Image (cartoon, rainbow, N blue to C red; front, side, top):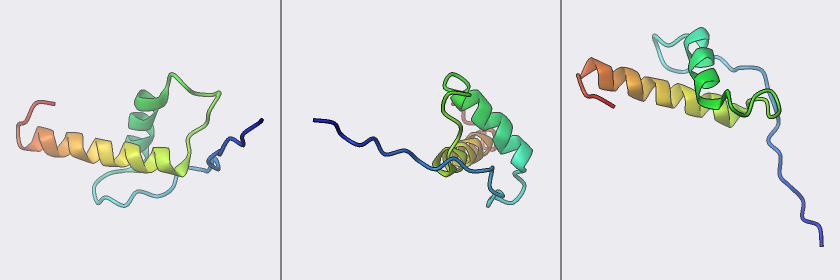
Length: 68
């Protein structure tokens, strides 16, 4: 019996939602996070959102002097 695989729709990088964070910053961070699976599986909206959230968390940790 075959099961359907759910695929996320691949999209262009959306605008950022965090003030002070540019699309370029998120793009570079996303590349570092997902480079092992590119280009076989292009990034999805969920990937971009997770990359931005992770980048913001890293930036906040650096700002407060917390090592990650």
